[in-house]
Image (cartoon, rainbow, N blue to C red; front, side):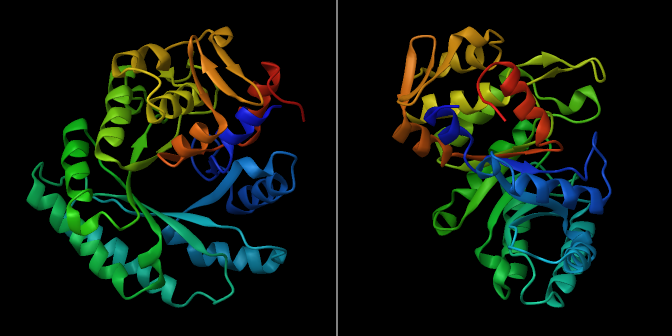
Length: 312
């Protein structure tokens, strides 16, 4: 392994073993994350991802096992069809948070799914964001990183505008993109992914991804019939873009590139074809793309090992 790859993947993988296709029990997921925290590549692991509705169950299991050192958590909250359903689910979550033990694992991130039927207008999105910020203001969660997920390109553009309004610029707000799932329509096209990356760059928004990023480079998924995006393609695209080393029109070309020989990593930096960044540019680029959720920590490492990029 080399410095560029290590810098690129530092605190990059949020473990989501509870979710498809892994669908592990909570106990199994806790065991695997615990093992990952002791592994050679533990610095690549970031948060344990958990539905907010299961936080007390998680705390109980962790207490039974015995907490050697605290983990940081990313909790999924919100969702539902209507704004009323969404508000109710968040209120239930906050009620559970109030009875947590003070020495429980800290929550660092909230991943907030907006209502599926939210109207495609600025006022509706502003109301939703104002509502949850008001609900969180009286809690320790107000200082968490908040990443908002919505369902369409049009919604994401509206949401990006709301999140970057002057009164919110100092808050730790960002976007979340679903990059896969168990059915083909959950995978964004290369054009959609490129446009999202450019949207976050242009709006100066941090972002994270979830699902479908098990492999370094794009592959065709037999189970879903969709093309799975490569996590290295996305990471390299972001750091090159943030370093002003790649024109916008080349982002899609990079995202669909399956030729591993076009990518090079060394102790000084990384390169895609003739475009390169140094270690400091990689670090700064990672401030934009915070992390991605994966239901497996082993699979990305195994693929990187097969490519000769790391050893266990």
